[in-house]
Image (cartoon, each protein chain N blue to C red):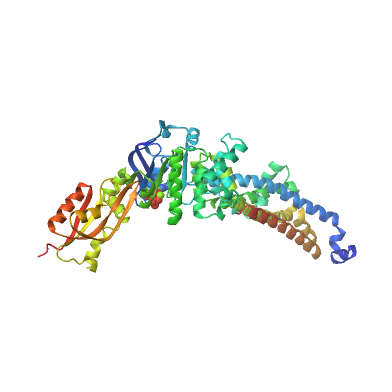
Length: 226
Length: 348
Ligand SMILES: Nc1ncnc2c1ncn2[C@@H]1O[C@H](COP(=O)(O)OP(=O)(O)OP(=O)(O)O)[C@@H](O)[C@H]1O
Ligand SMILES: [Mg+2]
């Protein structure tokens, strides 16, 4: 077994510690930027939905600011965002390089997209349910949590899965500018030194990661669809 | 008791304003079933949504018993709404919750303990006849069953008022009937005031005691269901009443010269119609015997509102002229309206 691996993946086997480290870095980036983006995107998506016309907290000013701000950040390619955010990243994370330095741009790259996913998921709610909840005396917070979020879990799971998968893509890209992780590993060895087996292994790990997320997302979605 | 004082509701939508409810004054007594009818866009839903302030009137006041709802804070209003149940045309059940969870939804902050909530929900499900469906999800239920769940949910906080916006419009006639029976039973058992919006006159006939007719944002006619059906005053009300009766078809038949309407001398076509509440009597055979008339009923429709017959008959009456006249006089004494539709004249 060991020999077979040595034969098939000569370059990977000589830098296994590097490889494990890069997988760990990718996971750390995913976890941190994912969790932060999850919270922020959820808050923004909910705020968008509630403040839009006909929403239970209709507020044109807040809605317009969020709507335009999200569009602004979504139209910037991630690679440019990475460079453009360096001063801000330094300010927030203390450094603009490495895993810590990648988290700020990853969050900026993900939150606008994720907010739209949440907004789209919540838009699927039948407005009659809000009305029914109001007629039963539910307050606004109750409507957000017990009606919108509860009824839309399926759509939210779908949006979260899509976002998480695109976030994996972004972490690989962030790796290219020195953030570490699998992307960095693949570029440094697979691309720059032409060690093709390194690229393959990185791809396999990424595919596995994506598949796990997709499976989990689909499971949650199924479980909550009746 | 529900009371509206000069209630108006304007919607401003992209430049133009719609006055959905115009200066409505009305009063609904406790424990009765009221109907609201009118064509699409007349403002029925808006009017009813003003009762629980899902729609806040732009003008006027809404009172429930002696509380002015329009003057309450948000929090107080939410408490009041718990005592005003509402059901909808498309049921509006939570699809992510099963039947039990739907019905228990409004009980969350009621202060009841878990066992008390269980007991309450189970008794509500029993009330609407769905005890065996507690674990089912809405997608697994028929329309009628969904509406029963919605009714149970609307009753969870023991409301004094139940609002129903076209609650039977998406159901077949058989299911409609069973839902109407349920509403009637709830009204009798719980003394709950029920307000039903409908475009089906049949629904009004079946369960309501009073009816409001709406047109263009205004209540143009209201009153006792029997009175409104027997003597509609406004054109729109007449149209509605005619839509449930086939008596006017006779004019069409005569125009088309259908053979049943071809008369011989001594015959005439009469339309009899109940005008007042009266008890069912053997009027046809009575006039036939007393005035020596042959009466051939062409068609008719008579049904009961409460215990009183309403509707009428179209018949060919054959006999001596003075006998026919006396029979007409006799029937009018009995509060039956008689209209001569076609007269073939006396026998030579
Ligand atoms: N939220 C709203 N914004 C703008 N206009 C509205 C709104 N709700 C109702 N309207 C308008 O108010 C009028 C009355 O509407 P409403 O829904 O009360 O009628 P309805 O009698 O219930 O009709 P239907 O039988 O079709 O349900 C209509 O002209 C409608 O377009
Ligand atoms: Mg309506």
